[in-house]
Structure formats: C-alpha cells, structure tokens
Image (cartoon, rainbow over all chains, first blue to last red; front, side):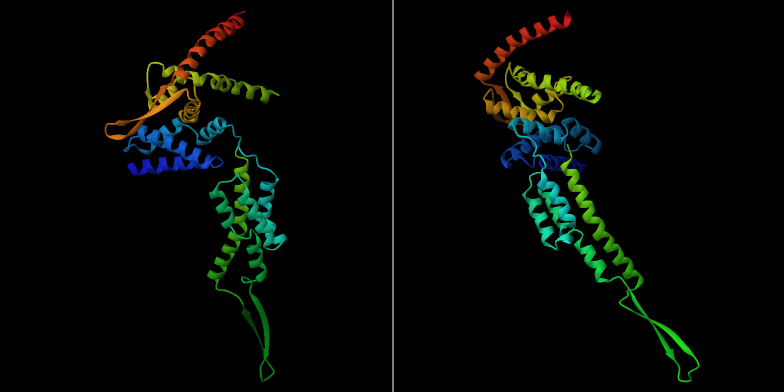
Length: 204
Length: 115
C-alpha cells in the first residue's frame, strides 16, 4: 500500500521539479522540499491510490505551482525562439541535408536551450542519433533487399533447359520482418521525438 | 472578441485574489503562530481564495523574504520537525494598514456598485 503512495508522491515531485526546470536550482529544491514535507504530513502512509490521487489533485497542478513561483521571482517562462524551432528540424533531417554535422548543430542548439528539461534533451539526443539519417542509410545500404539472378542451364543433351533462381543477400522471413520493423522504428522514432519536442514548447 | 471577453472574466477573480491573498495569510497569523501545513490547508479550504494549496508555498516564501513573516522549526511528537509561521512586527504593521485601507476600499466599491 505505502509503495503505491510513495510512487505517486515521488512521481508528483518529479513533475514539479520538471515544471520548475528553468528556475535556479536553489529555489527549485527549496520549493520541492516544502511541497514534499507538506505531502509527507497530509497523505498518510497507508493511503490507497484513489486517496493519494485526490490529495495530489487538491494540492494542485505542478505547472500552476511553478507559475506562482516564477511570478514570485519575477521570472517569465523562457519563450521559445528561432533556436528552438530550428533545433527540431535540424535534429530530424539536419543530418540528412548536411551529413552528421547538421544533426550535431541541432544537438548543440537543443542543449543550449532553457525551454526543455534535461530529460527532454536526453530523449531528443538518443532517439535517434542522427535523426532520419540512420533510416535512410539502412534503406540505401540494401541490407533488407534480396538480389535474385535467374540462371539458365542447358543440359548436355541440349534438349532441356533448366531455369534456376539464385538469390543472394536475402534473409530468412523472420530476419526480414525484424529488419523492416527496425527500419520502421528508425523512421517513426525521430518523427515522434520531433513532435514531442514541439509539443513541449507549446505546452502553454 | 467574445473569446477575449470571457478570458478577461476568468482572469478577474485571479487578479482580485492576487492582490489580497497575502493579507489573508497575515490575518490568519494575527492570533499567533501556525503550523505551515494547517495554514495552507485552511487557506485552501476557503471558497475562491486560492487556485490550489500548492500555489501558497511560493507566496509564503515571498512573505518570508519580505520579512513580514518568520518561521521556526519545532519538534513534533512522532514525526519530522514542523515549520511554524508567525507575524513579524513589520508584518503586523502591514496588516494594520491593510485593514484600514481595505475597509475604505470596500465601502467605496460597495457604494458605487449599489448606485
């Protein structure tokens, strides 16, 4: 029971920390500590899932609390500028247009920005390194394509012609399915990451 | 245009609240120190005063920095130490001024609304 409670409370504190990511560490940790001790005092150890969720809901949306804290400190939410909007396409297709370097510029812009959390930046860097470049590389390298050559063999008697097909570079059916799935992942994952980054910029 | 108006209407209570909330915090401390959690829960339970309990912590933090409230940690039986809030002399003075200003302000607004 208390495991569920702790998991939900910790998740909430993580969300709060994430919402406060643009604030100085000292202010962020101070507020998180205060909220943590409030939740510690108000949500009993043995509370069930529904009870914990109700209490957290009543305590409020982390974004709202972060907004109140920004207001107190006289800070605005960092406004996404051209760097952020350039970083997203660069991460996706920069490596294709300007091999590797384009993607690296995107990564630099990504990590310089204050609009994304460290977690967002990590996801954007690792899914997938190079953006769509690996997908295109894999498709062009033709690992998945099968090359077949038709060979005609004329028998010694000259009467019968045997046509045989020799295929090279192919894979077993299972291997091919796995390769296609991997290719799909390499295409879809960077696109999903780009959409995610864009949504994080527009969350207000 | 219609959307603009309704957005303004939604913002109105929050603007009103923002102006007076900190004085409500001071007023609750008038009769002596209060445990932070109880203070936040009491303010949170008042109708239309705060958007959520959580948003009170940044406010309390600001009041601390402004020197109108001060906090002390006290041992609690069978639990972690508790943070208590109390008015400082400066806070008491601010509350006194607000009380008088608020009475005048309220009377004026009531008179105009009642015309």
